Image (cartoon, rainbow, N blue to C red; front, side, top):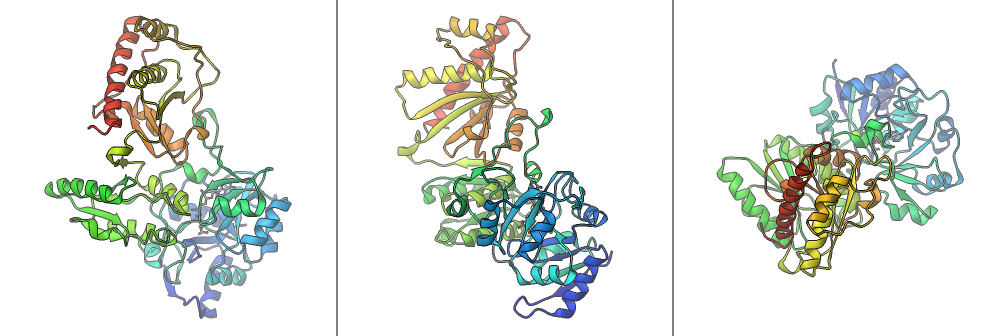
Length: 509
Ligand code: TXA
Ligand code: MG
């Protein structure tokens, strides 16, 4: 397919170009255009064949629904079955702008656009080019971010050209976008609004308008048992650069830079190409590797604005390993880390100063059912903490598939009691989104369990298999169905690993 690329100045919009783009939309074609958040890949949202073309061009799974963009706020009534007073307030305050609202859909919104859901996502963008294009086409424009599925979202026309040239009819080049991360997605179908994807409009901003707001309680439980996360896009790998990205986090930025410098030195000595994501304030702390500043910590809207561009720049520089500082403290920290963690596949190194090694720690041991391995690790760790009089660390355990409450496995109980542990009335507990907070560290028994947590829960930051944390290879497998002696072996191994966990927690290697 031949792709026309046309430059349009957002301050002085060329009507002829917009009209020709609108014509493409009307006849069911694809046009990429700038919005205030990221570039979108647009097509007529009410035409099912047009929606199908979007999925094909992006290489995106067709169960991942699209956002429909409107230019006039009142058009929401054509798409939503019902617009609650809460939704009306939000529309009044935040539209046009980077807030997407989820409603029950009207019948004539095609299932192809909504990924088969009975709900529809609606957004009224503020970018003048997006608004003119929607108006000129007379259509409602379905538009996901204009990147190939899995790549960082595009914040400049060059990114769209790199991903979609030859796959779409037209690309409107309106320069760099201003916000740089996608809109906040908010489900307003229930009593209390629920954030399904964090974005530029923060939880606090929404709460100021409508009171209580929740953060996605749906991304928990087991996909294979038929539960779907509410924003289906959240379950796929996202934003990944070609190089392997690792986040290095710590309170003391000089220690963080020191850690990155020493890792980079080793990598560079092995002939690897190393990129470093720094800030205006920290860039001069790095001694080697290719250093790019992502913005200023003084104003984290600059970090959001540059995030995807910097990831793509490291791709074009051919960087094989990328190390990034962490950005969770500012107003947009939640939204930025949501993307950065996904891009890093949750690879995270923590750097702690001597006096903060045991601070703010909640350890959650996780296995499949929480009846044996995670519970054994849990009480072994609890006893160790108790013996060493450490009170700052909390420890608990959870399971990934807990269909009903069960007591500890009887064979595990025999072994635990033989080792002198007091087995209280433990019942198995399912890991939920609420368990996951800023200070927690999750230790799983196997890689598969680790991946499942990363895929199904939001904003998991510190997660390792227990052997990985102890710098060992391999996994702790479930002795279920085997002899008592196998449970005994498992417990001894966990006791050993818990001791190593403790050493590393205290700052040892
Ligand atoms: O800022 C933005 O929102 C950009 C620009 C182009 O407007 N668009 C964007 O679209 O990011 P996309 O398709 O990359 O992401 C849409 C997100 C996905 O996570 C998707 O699963 C969710 O919104 N979504 C769409 N319809 C939904 C629905 N009916 N229910 C729940 N989530 C939905
Ligand atoms: Mg996207």
